[in-house]
Length: 494
Ligand code: NAD
Image (cartoon, rainbow, N blue to C red):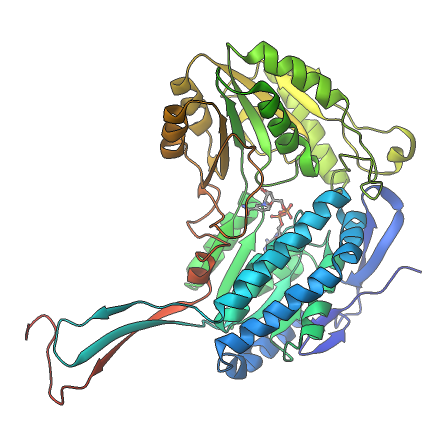
């Protein structure tokens, strides 16, 4: 019998009011049912928002260091349960164990930072222009935050949002992707064990249309924090615009690794293999384009093709495998459609280009590592996010041309350049249009201590992680304390 998971609303595990459920299957083996989950609707969202609103009154008054202690405890429980959750996550969404462990580690790292932030949440103070007067500012909580998350980082992304939001004094309604509800459920179990008061964190499972949309439109939700596709992000932004709701959007990418003529070839090849085929290419920061200087192209391609052909594909629970399946059949169809589009556009398919169905893999949504050469900057496979193990190789004659090709896309999340030349690296840092630039590292590998997010169509200017995320989940209040005993007029009595 499949495990029955529930929603978590107002401190209780409950079914959807309609009683409806949906199934979640293992993308590496469709015979394996991970569990059944409440197929919730607007009424369940409403109950969760009401609980979060009620809990807010008390939670916002709990001293921030105490809130931080609960978050830190959740981090300790993630350490304790890391292996168990990693296995469940691999079963649920396919990436290999090494990567699911890393996903949870990111949550643990965030808990360490957020827990300590409870003792900081620094404001700004400044001298007043008038006598006998103080000027200070402090971060205030905002209210109920709706957290809508994708499936590719089932613990890392929710914790990036939820831990800082809680430390700031907000309450939460969490709507995870319907492809990864089990990992979400484990996270909420951990909150319960860590001592989160009832109503402060609520979990509502279901589809984007039935749960995400009512959450976005709910008048008692003050903040929406969304990570997902640009198409959905645009719809959410316009809905939030109408009600002037605060919204942060972390969206798609079309990230590139540039390799200059003086680069260390072995290092660059290691980087692109990890960047393009890690998580089966299903990362917002995945290396989707490889921009090669013509003088180094043959050396890089020779090694890259040999290594890519040897990638061991299979069930991520088997530690000898390097690349798991795509998340579902729809995603495999999208990836395959892009491969056909690339061929029609005249790009040269060097390896891969079809579903991988050997042995046990025939029961899952596997796809071969795929590399296109001869890709031109205007082609759709050079412009659009594919979200699969497909790498487009573009050749350039100079650094200036590499920059132009790199920047000639709608997105701007992550970027990378391999070069030994400190001047080129410095120019890249300045001129690559992206929220993240790696020097001699692949496009993936962000650490939680720095801001995370992108420019252009990758978002709306907010950042997660680091200390920047606290700007999303708090509102500034400026306070003027006048102890002169008389009316002092700023800008006039100076
Ligand atoms: P998605 O946009 O399909 O779904 C994301 C979440 O939004 C899910 O929980 C989904 O149920 C919900 N949703 C869908 N339609 C909705 C609607 N109309 N209203 C409200 N909620 C709705 O994305 P996905 O397929 O889960 O994830 C892949 C995408 O996420 C890629 O584009 C990837 O680049 C992006 N991503 C971005 C980042 C980042 O930080 N920039 C990180 C990871 C993933």
